[in-house]
Length: 281
Image (cartoon, rainbow, N blue to C red; front, side, top):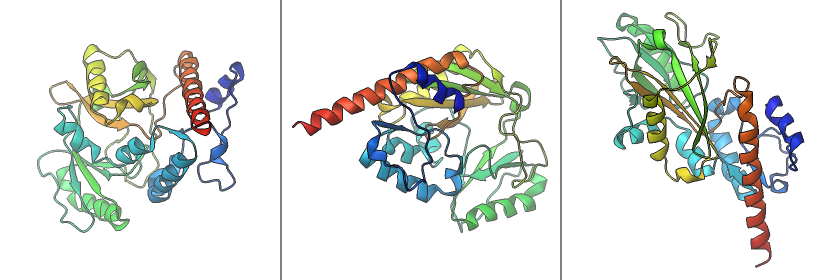
């Protein structure tokens, strides 16, 4: 955020960093509000999504509220799969439902609303008791549980994240696996271990573009991040589609900051022109 904010000094636009839950902020006074780092939203999702709707009625919000609402719960993976986007296989367990877990392979349990691998952990089939307790803890908060096979190749080839601005590829990073064996779901973890710049393969780019094409009203996106890892056959599959508040890894790609700033300024100018046109009708 400091790097991004400082870059506006070289533009004709004024940028202000504010907290989404600050009651003193007059959102109507901005031409554009850009969601960047509300890292607490995953455990305040109802409150945050209420703010998204309220803010979007006072000014232009990026990304748009409909997309934020859709992407905020990871059931979107089902829709991506139905639209023939290769995704990590995912089973959802609603609060109070029987907890059915894999018995033949390592798996991951995590909440359907989350960020930064919060409350996520990997288990062997023999660790069923611990995994059930984990799932019950998530369900106790009224949150749906996600169960996914652990993609073992991630321990070798890592996870890749491809960043897009206005649906154009900007840059990519690769990081090591986030979930070591035996890490408790409530234990501290590094969400970005070994992060490094990455040049995506043609298969990775094709997967990311395919995923974005499947997003409802994708032409309205300001920013996007597509996360992926290799399946057992060595082919990339999407693990996350981040459209709410993705970290864009700008500190690893500072050369990309002017492009993102330009996109923000242009979106703000369009919003101002639209508001001025309505006020003169």
